[in-house]
Length: 376
Image 1 (spheres, helix red, strand yellow):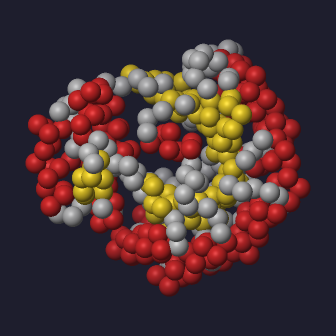
Image 2 (tube, rainbow, N blue to C red):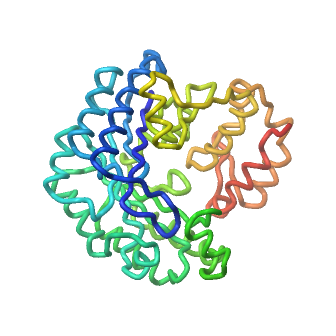
C-alpha cells in the first residue's frame, strides 16, 4: 500500500495560531498546479510498482483551487501511477469555502472523503483564532457535505484554547456527536515561536496554553467520544468502526508515501525527503526539470525510533518482539526494566505481545516514547 500527499500552499488568511498565508491569485494557483503536475512525472518511479490506495489534498486550503486544476492534478496522478479503484481520496476544506454545487462537483471528480477544518463551533473562540467562518457556518458545512452525498466526513477540532472552559468544550463535543460525523481529529493548541500567536504570548498580550486545562479537555474528550461509540485509534484521532483514515494510518504504520508540492515530505521505507518550502523556488526548480528537495537516509536506529514514536500513538501500540527482526534492537535487553516500570505505573499495558499506552499514558506519549529511543 502506498499513498500520495499533495500539499496545496494556499490560504485566504493567516490564523491566529499560525502565519500560513499565501496568494490565491489565478496566476499563482495556475503556476503551482502546473508545477505539481510536472513533479508527478518527475517522481513517477518513486513508488515503484506499488499501487496507490490513498490520495490526500492537504495543507493550506486545497478547496480554494479551481475544480479544473484539481481535476487535472488527479488525472495526471491516475495516468502516472496505479491508483486502486477504491482509493481513499481526501480533500481538506474550510467551512466558508463550501457550497452544495462545489461539493457535488468534488464528488464527481472522485473525492470521496472530506476533511473540514471546523476547529470550534463557538463564535468567540473562532474570532480569537481569526478564523473566517462562524459557528453556524461550521454546522451548515457538515450538513451540506451530507446533502451532497459524502458519507466519509471528518472534522478538525482544537482544544486547550485560552478562554475555552470545560463546559464550552463539552458543548462543542456534543454538537460534534449530534452531527453524526464518523471521524474526528482533535489537536491541542500549540504555541510556535515566530507565529502570530507565539509573538503575542512572548509579549504578554496573550496567555500561554494552560497545560492542566488542556489535559482536562483531553480527558473529557476521550471519555465523551468513547461513550458515544468512537474509538481513539490514535492519540488525536477518533472514529467509528470502519472509518479510520486509511491515509494517516499508513503514516503511522510506516508505509511508503509520496509528497508533492512545496514543503511536502516523502518516505520510501529507508530515506525521507522533503521539498523546499518557498513557492517561487519550488516552481522554478520544477520548471527546470529538477526536484527541489533534500533527503536523509535513515539508519536502523532512526527507523526504530520512528516506529516507537508513531506506534505508541496508536491503539495497536508496538510489538517489542518485532524490533529485533525489523531493526536489530532487542527491547527486552535494552528497555525491559522501562517497559515493566511503565506497566506497573499504569501508563501502559501488554496484551498478546502488543505494548500499548493507557489513557493516562497517552497524555505523556512523547515522553514515554523518548524513554525507549536509541540515542547516540
